[in-house]
Image (spheres, rainbow over the protein chains, first blue to last red):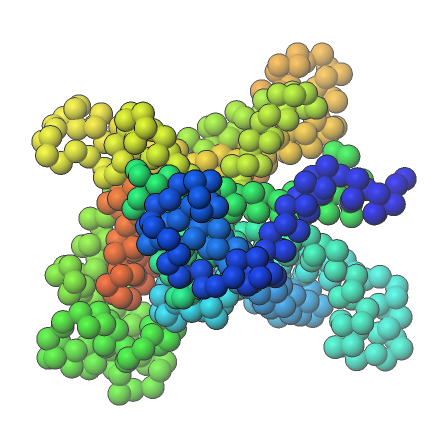
Amino acid sequence: MKSFQQRFFGDIRVIAGLSWLLFVLVFAVFAPFLAPGDPFAIVDKPFIKPFEGYGLGTDSLGRNLYGGLAHGARATLFIAVLGTVAAAAFGTLVGAVAGFYGGVIDACLMRITEFFQTIPSFLFAIVLVAILSPSVPSVVIAIATVSWPPIARVVRGEVLSVKQREYVLAAVIAGQKDLSILVQQVLPNTLSPLIVTSSLLVATAILVESALSFLGLGAPNVMSWGFMIGSGRQFLRDAWWLVTIPGVVILVTVMSINLVGEALNDALNPRLAAL
Amino acid sequence: MLQAVPVIIGVMVLCFLLLQLAPGDLAMVLAGEAGGAPPGFIEALRTRYGLDQPVYVQLFYYMKNVLMLDLGFSFRHNQSVLSLLLGRLGPTLLLMGSTLFLSLALGIIAGLLASLWVGTWKDYVISLTAIIAYATPLFWVGLMLILAFSIKLDLFPTSGMEDVVAFNEGFARVADIAHHLVLPSITLSLFYLALYARLMRATMLEQRGLDYVTTARAKGVAERQITTRHMLRNALLPVLTMAGVQVGGLLGGSVVVESVFAWPGLGQLAFEALFSRDFNLLLGIFFMSACLVVVVNIVVDILYVLLDPRIKVA
């Protein structure tokens, strides 16, 4: 059988997905150097078409589309990743406690998790951001609040199966405390499904962030891809590129993350992947 | 089915907590922030919600009011929130219903075909399309469809639910609404279509190797029969479960789609409420949507029993 690295990096999905993500990441990190200046600054006449003098063209106020995309990569990725990390932390806590202690605690925590999966989550995110007033922290909180339940369920399932293993029982007999058993023995063995689920959730988080900023609920004064589409939609008839280009960028980025996440899952579970 | 009650109570508590988070006291928010409510009305609200009393008493008053379907008054619209919601419910249900039908029907067919053609180029085309559709932002699909089919080809209207100045009646009106419905329901369906197609394909492939299929084949049942009578029915169950789980997401998506197409439903109302900072109306929409999700889940539970006689209604 091939090694994990061979399976993972030999996968066409990973090669395609990772190259695009690396490309976006370079823009996210080096946006101030690759597209110097304020992305909100007016640089030229409005409505210059792409490749007709100003890179990817300008928007209705004469802002540079390329600059917006570069700085948007920074904001969108930052918010999506931060929201997912917060969701992963909270979801792991809930799932680990529920799985490890079982009984009434488990039943209560899982009811709450199911509750958060039942309610219309995007609508909840909208209400949350509207009430907390739009800002980077409130968008991050909204993303985390709607994405933690799947993590909690995955971690709980893993903890349930791991805690019966001999080495955990040995740690219990050796008198190790609950918390250190959880952190040192149980959780490290739940990492791989956690990483797969979280990586797929980053994709969802990007979609949520874009939809929020499209609706005008994004952080003010932060250029993001969804905001660019939202501000360009009025000019759809005359300036198609203002909506089309940022949309394609979101689409390809989300798809790349999905492809890499699924390939990661297949590489970690080679027997399931054969199905 | 019994879980419906705790969910509704949970949603009410959540709404109450969100109201506490909003700037200003409960009465101010309920009256619609800067919504121009008369001062006497706010005072009356303060006494009615017991704002001089501890928080749990306030919660009790709040829940009592919501349970009696008193969701407050929107001064922006000069209407009670309940009547506003009921007025906008129809268009949203129409959009949701057609989307559910479209995404389930096409998703199941696409997934079934992909599983029958597994490993061939046809399977790759279906799977790749599903992967792309699964990653596309809803609002962008809507705008692209408008660009292609309304602006360039002029086949469908860009917005609204019907041509109000045409004064259509009877069948002409139905046809007009259906014509307006095409683009919004395709937009909202696309993501779910992809989701169901992928799930259907995966479950069909999983079913393929199970014992009952081997038994049927050994008995000499025709392949076509095995697929349609045996595997398809079993594979439908996870898809149905997923459809029930996704109803909440569908309602969230309809906010975006309705605001793109100016479809006069709950989502569009939510969009308007956002901009007038009418939090009480927004929470009313949230509450109503959560109730809708609960109702749909009950329907899914019943459908489950019809599809699989082994399961009983809990």
